[in-house]
Image (cartoon, rainbow, N blue to C red):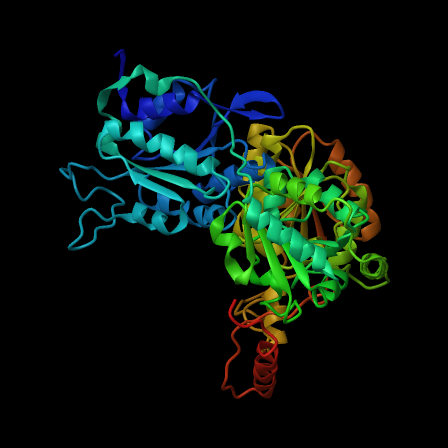
Length: 613
């Protein structure tokens, strides 16, 4: 057997370079690049290996370990999980900075390969700088924290272990059911060790993502349920997009006359004007989708884990509604007393459509969905219409941005008040042009994801919308994108703090406290000059005074040669209606009458929740 002698770090990199996949009928690298911040633990061995292949496997320098891992996740979402970026950090705080990003990838079922330096297996120099020691358990260190937020975790304590570990990590990240982040801890002394690796280990491998077909009997049960349904409803989740099932689902809904609503992750599977589309459902939903959900007798949930923001904490649906859950993941499919149809979304939807040949939902129910959605569209027009108010609402800003966005531009949002406003107000013009990360609702994802999405697809413009609070939390990838030449447009809506959390605080009877800057313990709540700050990082930037100016500024932003930032002051108290009820903790005992009233209302809402889910 022919052997290749190289270090563990060199073997790891060589293996990654020889993995390929198919995207749009083209053979491409499975791992197209690495985001890296080097420090002790990855700078002497892993960086040496990466430098040797820098033209084959490009390394991009990050500004923050969390943000570069978020950029890798934004890349994966833009590629619909077909390609995987790598992120590497040093030991200690560098590694721990990536834990939040791992949590986001885990919650959203997204692939990213995380490589962190580790302490010495031989323990001779222990404790090393940045090592967190655990008395009584010397083998435990900060990298063990990734076990809670990754689908695959391993510590490579011998060079030969790569031979079994790397294929398992890749298989996990490509499995539609198990998809999520993979993590490898790389001890410093093991990275340097040379080993005679079998040449076959480095053979070029072409990976195909599997498409499991549904069980025929379960599919038959689903068909019978639907054929007996009077008021069926489709909920389209993120799995529809990752499966590439958009066309199949659009065809099913139209041919069978079934109203189709969307989760946050599922928004963008169909265009806004699709004849069966009735808007988003749930807490960030539309009055139209929530009205139909309250009356539906059979609900087909496709590629969704049905989190509380989709279900209104399980108050959105009629008490006797039956659920059919189509999902590749058994865990998600069997939740909430659903009939679990386990299989790939595209294949299952196509087989379901064929089995329903000749059947259509009641015409009155289909018309009711269209009528409710027409009312919702009229409401959106009124929310987005310019007024004489001194500052615009989120809805008005979103409306202007939406109108000026190109048909294939990608909208990105994640945290604060903007997710609800873009989910409700953004009218999708082309499939797969909407990315609202809300499975983890991670502040800081947006700008980094804009960088990753721009890297993933140069043919469209990422448009990132954030609030001032998110900008202040993580903005360094504005600089990273200028350095690397990956442009996106960033709109900063400045409403003076964490406005949506202030809204929740007030809605549950609490006083405004520590959210809006004016309600914080500060010497002076002065505004940030976002334009000057962005320009200092090399971006083009402009402050916008009005909605009329915003449209012109967006056209200018499209013409620039680098990442461009627009800031606009927005209203902290005006929100688009349509919300469902949400279960949150409210104090049972309080000196405030408003809190006591909110607690009583919360208990009343809980009486409407489905039991046993």
